[in-house]
Image (cartoon, rainbow, N blue to C red; front, top):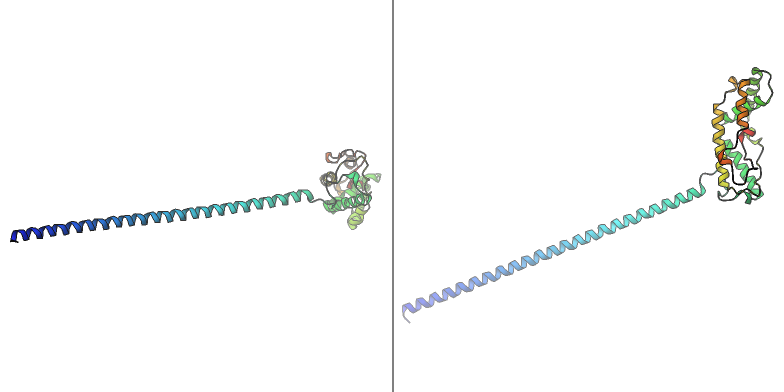
Length: 246
């Protein structure tokens, strides 16, 4: 083999080696790219999975919160319902009980509770002021001086024994068989009577300023018509207790 053939052979070997080297590097680059792509894909998949997990967790948390809120609301609703049923009534009798179905013992209980309520809803000063004015008005005085004296003495006697003054009440009329109002209706009537009584007595003169001309305001209160809430269904002949009748 001459020198020219040897050089040609060496050139062919070098060229072949170069081609193989380039092919190998190209394959490595492709594998690396595929690996990176697979890695990115796996990363995105993990990210999506985390996102889904967070979303599910948040959704479950929100659902639980909403459920707790609904539960609290239902509980409040039940409490309100119980409160509406029992209320703050001064009697332990059920508000839905019809008056004409009360037993004798229950009617007596309700009457006692009404007068006890009046004694707590109306202050001693207001009640005894009225006692003085009422007594003086009905005592047939002959002068303003005597009127004032009678008023003051009655008011002082009341203040010295308020509990005794309240126990000297006329009691209650028993419900008639036709009375179809409920205990709750009756309670509303009694509460309104107490409020109306206090408002009228507060506007009246005191014993010190009482005159014969002012006795008419006492008579007007004594003879006042029933309050609207006291016009009970089929109970027209049943007059409710009233502190102005003591």
